[in-house]
Amino acid sequence: MGGGTDASRMHFHLPPFSRQHAVSNPESAPPPRSRLSLAILTVIGLLLVAGLLALGTWQVKRLSWKLDLVARVEERVHAAPVLPPSRSGWADISAARDEYRRVRARGRFLNEETLVYAATELGAGYWVMTPLALDDGTTVLVNRGFVPADKREASTRPQGRVEGDTEVTGLMRMDEPEDSLLRSNKPQEERWYSRDVGAIAMARGLSDVAPYFIDADATPNPGGLPVGGLTRVVFSNNHLVYAVTWYCLAAMSAAMLVFFWRSAGRDNRGAS
Image 1 (cartoon, rainbow, N blue to C red):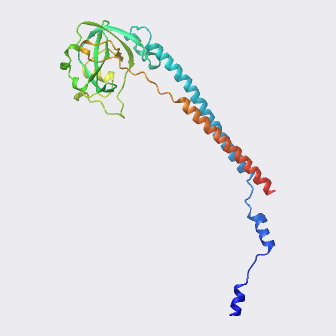
Image 2: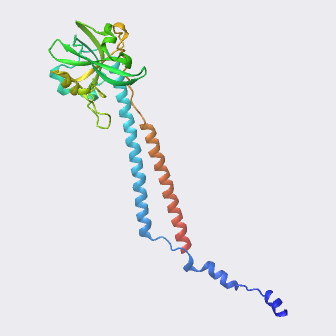
């Protein structure tokens, strides 16, 4: 019993020099970063910061371009109407220079409608695309406006049929070729999802058709339908947000790089 009591009172202590040796042993400390690894990581960090700054600057330039584009389009929309481009000028038409230009055309509606599915502020329905035969023998498609689904058939809105010479004022719009990512047009079934001028002209057997169409303005049509003037002139402009994001990421990357340099300097000083 006595031996057991003595054994329970025994304590083991590390020598003081052993604990000091465990703390100060150079072999247990992390090795200092090599100059080569520091140089490589520094170059990578600087390239990252430079790339982010370049992206931010590019977005600032894009912002300037977008603001200029919006200003030019606004000027076109509110300008006095001009004659639409004739056949001789079709090859020179471009969206950057001509889209949303306010135009005025005189001719005779062929009253052969093509209805294109539409979702507007007035609800779901159709755009009424009607060929307008011009005096020079060419034809331009006119989006006369919107009709609700229950007014799809022309017989339900007979007053909207315009005979004889007429004048149309509206905004010049570019062709909308079928997008394979969306639902496909089915001319044989009279199911249209895009205002594809070429496809509509082919389906209707039209020739000498302008490569653009006209969105009619809000001038009321007889009987109130179709409803024109629903063109939405809207441009997404997120370039400022993108620029701020890239610049913030550049600042954060630069701060991390500075922290890395200071940390590496402390490690190297401690190792020496």
